[in-house]
Length: 239
Ligand SMILES: [Fe+2]
Image (cartoon, rainbow, N blue to C red; front, side, top):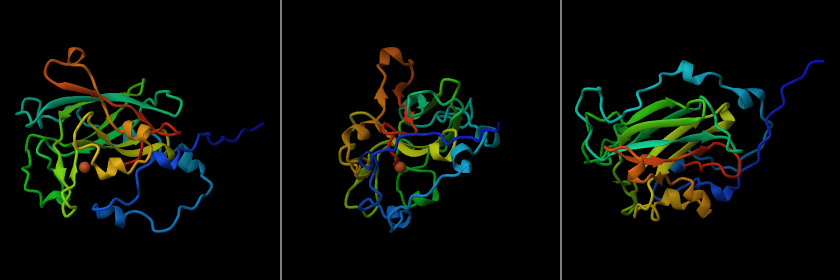
């Protein structure tokens, strides 16, 4: 008897745990979000099971963004380690999850054409983005410098708090998460319009990393832990 693959079941998240689609003062949210309500449709096996083996098809980077070369000068700013786990809705590790990240440098400047108007300096010793593969326990770790805060142009003095952008791929397109990680107790966090657009405070907390006591970390870097839950009602909010 042949058995056809069954779509995996998962619980649907609550809209109160998600960020707002349109953020006042953040113009691009108005150009990349739909005007019409979403339409439910049946998922296909392609979306539920693929893509396969992304980590074998894409370049995987060095896990140290703080230097362009191992023997090169270190980037400016506070050296930090970000480590954590990628999990499914049951807390089970997702081995081989693809973790991509990008961030501003210590001065709050992105090495990207969209940020060319910034007066903050670029740092030639900083790599600023990376792609890593989670191990068999779903764990990832990379070294970088703490990103600086930056003002959002023409927004009426809104400053983004230090944050790191992530795109995480689980075992299928339906388990892809695009989000941002914030730093604990930053005074700019409560006023951030993107973080504050998540109605549920517990979901907002899931976007904030945990500071590891310095006695448990490295001698030369502050350590932050941050887990990603890709699906379900406890998932990490999309940001
Ligand atoms: Fe950003």
